[in-house]
Amino acid sequence: MGGANLITALAVGGMMSAGAVSSLGGDWPQFLGPQRDGSTTNSVTVPWPSDGPVRRWKLSVGSGFSGPVVRDGKVILFDRRDDQERVQALDLRNGKVLWEHRAPTAYVDSFGFDNGPRGTPATTPERVVTFGAEGRLTCLRLADGAREWVVETGRELGGDKGFFGPACSPLIVSNRIFLNLGNRDGGGIAAFSLDTGRLLWKRTDHEAGYASPVVGICTLASGLSSPLALFFTREGFVGATYDGDVRFKHPWRSRQHASVNAASPLVVSNEVFLTASYDTGATLLRLGDRGVKVIWSSDEALSAHYATPVVRQGFLYGFHGRQEQGPEFRCVEWATGKVRWKQENLGAGTVALAGDRLVLLLESGELQIAEANPQAFRPLGRAQVLGRDTRAPFALAEGALVARDPRQLICVEVGKPTL
Figure (cartoon, helix red, strand yellow):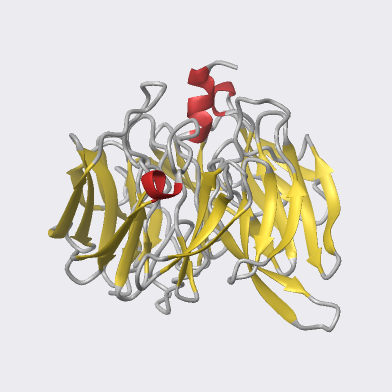
């Protein structure tokens, strides 16, 4: 398989975090939103004016596929300008730059594709954590951007560059930062102290792939529940306690070498959904005392290239198929893997769930709103809001959609603000 085809799959790879969940329903404080599952209770409203949703502001951006996040009225953007990785805090109301932090980078993409960061920042009420294209893990103060600490994981821990460099979106939970690190010498997954950056533990020799960790629950025979950090590495599914006790390893990956697992796991109760492209497919797993039980596995249900699907009331909604081959948008039954409907001719994109509505941002730069309806794909509104090659994940916060393409970051009104 050619490098160019592989690039389109991995470069935007998702990363996850389940910690740092905001107490404010209007925030989008990390990759995949408040609960790290692509959903929000915020509503979106349609129809829009004839020329599309009202734009609050826009500004030019540097390279990278890191998505914006929003906390406490601040938009956090992580990109690259010239030879520096840059973190900016912007006012959600008007786009004004509140602070900026820069650090040098010499990362060069092996395929000549994009030299910017892929990982989306994670935030807490006091901090911003980023993971750059050379493996630089950085903690900044949310209030003013002052650096608290930095760990060069690539240099200090021997992290593997992989196909497109480190791309994990950090997960913050229980004062720990979890990373799909990808060091094949005992550091495939790792946890760091949020306060100091100190390495707390590392496990496995798995390469990273381009999925980000999430939080899950294992139901024990006693009836109690045990929280876990869940990782989808290049080799498969790994579940570990916050203290680094590996509870599960379930091999599940493409049969092709030039491939990755890029979409993050989705968790409902003690069940976990995994999906990947490259002739891999999807599987639903149940976690328990005795390990991982496969509920179903299918090459034909939902093979996500890079965008993590969403789930509502027992149904999955997501993009199926390779980005360069014209994927379908599908609805699939969670419990069985049965395909309920297919929608063609949208192309690739990313998806979020706002209440009972799907928010699709396509690679063409078109925004679509549709019903999260297992009976059929029912669009409610569409507008051109960005340009071509729109692949970074977006944020929904305080009545606004904040999103980027390779050239600009925009903020448009899609609901009622709560600011």
